[in-house]
Image 1 (cartoon, rainbow, N blue to C red):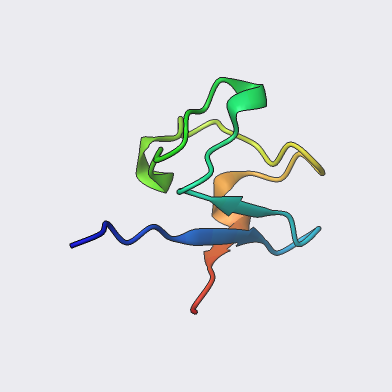
Image 2: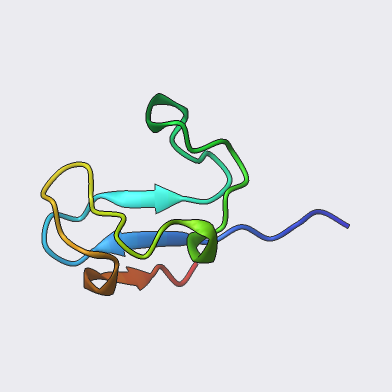
Length: 58
């Protein structure tokens, strides 16, 4: 059974964080869960906080 990964979209700029892909260019390895990101993590595009993201329903 494959693991289900989620995507979270910034409500301000529509940047999407994909747990499956992570962000290796920011030292966030693939498979890093949203909950594992630091509470002070910000959107790399617009600087919004985690509270400004919502789960993308697929």
